[in-house]
Image 1: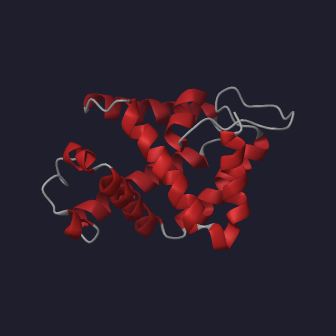
Image 2: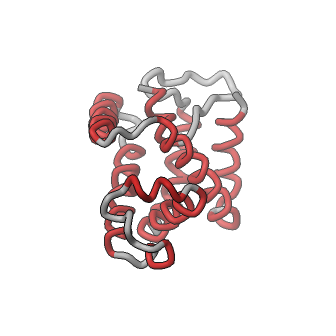
Length: 163
């Protein structure tokens, strides 16, 4: 499950200290706290940050917009204000919040991730869109929170990238 969680969070966090890592998440207690603290900042504007995430994804990789039937025909210039986009972004952000809120409950987390995997599997979503989304999420988090708690975000991703 640690692999699937890392998949959703955009990489594999690794501890640079000799902290015990939870085998189900792949995170040490310190790393889990960094993820939770960073996500609290994101959640202060979940709607705006969710839309920003998808807008960045579709600007960098326009072909991914076609993978979303309800968003495929909306011009990019109108997408950020589309209620369909906002609703989908909210759904994704609530889902990610639930995942992060359950980092300390591996059994529940595993069921949630399994359901997310099944939902995306039915749509034939492969690994690549998740990896791309993780990279974009990292960039948005780093840029968007630099002035608030850049240290938290920087530590979270520097720990992850230390591998």
